[in-house]
Length: 277
Length: 352
Image (cartoon, rainbow over all chains, first blue to last red; front, top):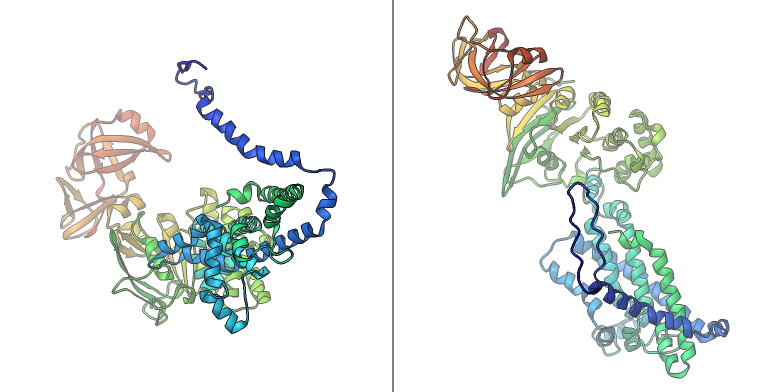
């Protein structure tokens, strides 16, 4: 490792690809980075109370938090699909003044600290919020500190993942199929339903899975907007955080469950969904 | 097949498309039952014309399209009574061949069962009944082309548009599909506009050719007429003729300093056309009349079927097709000076 060996003279025609040594300037940080990413997860596995795991998993509050997490993340993903796919279509297909601004706005929740998102949601949908006030007066609906509020917070944070994924798929899709459908007499809605959507389905699925995973792990916006009530708004991440103060072993168990769910998602995504446009 | 009164019913269009670096302005009359081929080099505006007819791109100021007397250009693509076959077919990859064909009828409000019945009958007609359940990805090029045709016909169009329908096929399949397509077009009672850059496709499939160059019509007529009397270098190259523009007096046409005697009587600006096979080459100046004779320089020699095609420079640029034996006899090589002549009976002159 003292000096760089001179590159062997290559005779033209030999054509062997150059297989030099890997430069340590890249390899060392790369390995450090890998350790940094994997070590905490390994720690989680090493410190897990394997002996008492089954009992702990069967504890009502664990099951309750898990159930709540799965239900809210799924409902939030459904909401995101319902609103996000049309939004992605609009961003990919329509052209109107301010399109770039709208696209930037859509991605704001992606970079916004989730706590800030929660505060913003409170300001708008809270009891005294701009829309919340009206919602309560007109329908008697209050969102903050309810299970519905959890769904709102998760959807707010997770929707950009879906929109970006679907928009990418729409942009990559061959628009001439839509033209072909139009020459066959298909209205724009029929084109979307019978041609565009099936063509971008891999992108929609990938986006939905990412969206669901993000919703499942949501913490900041949820605790700010929906609070931390067991059985009502206490999702897994909230339960982990709370358990860490009182019962670290329970926190590890809950974390393991979330880790398992993440791994299962990654495995199910595999290459074909992740790499598809 | 050809209707004698192209003015009644059918398609009447003036296609005007103005873009920053390109302009198209052509007039198109197609009778019901007639097949018209738009022929032209790449970038001439053929596909633009077809897309304008389909409603996939808009017309500029001054353009209009009427079909059977009703304005078409005011309708969106999905409301026009058209069927279109795209160059790479664009069969929906997620639908079976049957559902691809049934797609159009479904969009026109026909019930699912009836649409599928119509689609099955059409697939039967193009000889693909047993491929109904197959996805497009598993069809061969020729099969996909026939599914695309069936899909376009399934909506019972009054105007059928074909964009390079044979371009994506290999030579062997092409021959087969071309004759099948010709039969289907003969059965079709609406107007057909076909875009191609292949002269053979155009000659075989069309009743009339319209040649477009740089967004304008440069020549139109029956295929045989266009093939016999090309009016531009592009058309001459397509049909494989040497073409020159000159000044005719009586039976002689002067092109540059070469004087052509022809069998036809023309006066004024005229075209002279002759086949490369009609050109004879000599090492020394042949005796006899100085007409139809010029001294040329060999610019290149290449194989052309069983013969050899010689590219000639000189006062006029010409191609000559000769036998390989003659190449040896003449000791042809690039740069060599030779004499070229063509018989008066094999040249063809017509007014420019």
